[in-house]
Amino acid sequence: MTDLAIDVEGLNKSFGKKHVVKDFSLQVRRGEIYGFLGPNGSGKTTSIRMICGLLKPDSGRGSCLGHDIRDSAAIKREVGYMTQRFSLWEDLTIRENLEFVARMYGMKDRKGAVSESLHELKLHERQNQLAGTLSGGWKQRLALAACMLHRPKLLLLDEPTAGVDPQARREFWQEIHALAAKGISVLVSTHYMDEAERCHRLAYIAYGKLLATGTPDEVLHRVSLSTWEVAGAPAKLSMLAERLEEREGVAHVTAFGNTLHVTGEDEAALQQAIDEYRADADLHWTRAQPGLEDVFIHLMRGVSEDAQ
Image (tube, rainbow, N blue to C red; front, side, top):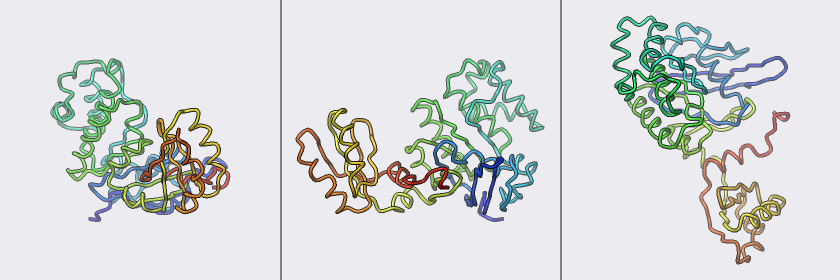
């Protein structure tokens, strides 16, 4: 058996005249957490649906857990798919929701499987609570429990932590790493850079095209960037950003809280671009290490939907 849970190559999908996914290729190993990143409308959800057999590609080939991606029935039996929005029944209790999902899968020992899932995801004390009364974090935990009921070998998570508080997000990722340690593969789409750093490998897609893949460290070093961080009064930083964006040697200027990240590809050219502003006593400049967000913003620079 191959050690690849997902192996797709050259996938294309169009809706009318709109080419949503273009020559998409991806390989995900068993037991690997693979982060899937990109702006809204970039083709992430469409790609995920093709991978798990919910949507047929116009062209290309691939397999998911050893099954052809066009064999949706076989894939569904071994994949758990968690959508962006809570899709269970809010007028049923936690236990009732899980028992209903277990019946849909035709599981034999439904009550035993549900009880085990309730304990594994620490839902047993709330099992009689209506799903509609749960907070975002508990709804997320219930959705994950429903995904895991039939013991899938692959989890496809489509922006699972959107609208969830930081503590719930951290606990969710602890669960995901525990599942990966048991050999379950995870493909997760996210907008959060701190979550991207928790993944074993990353893929970044924009306007249907794959721009970068690799470990977080490999992606960070894919582009040679030099970055300065500057702090100051908000009004002054806003004016500075406008001026620097027009300077040669500055690739992009990005606001991070009360600071700006000023980034360029050539260190000497960037230094020359900011020199006159470094003498301003109201601005505080320090060297900074470019992060994943800097890299992704740089990859997106100059990319437009029309151009792609």
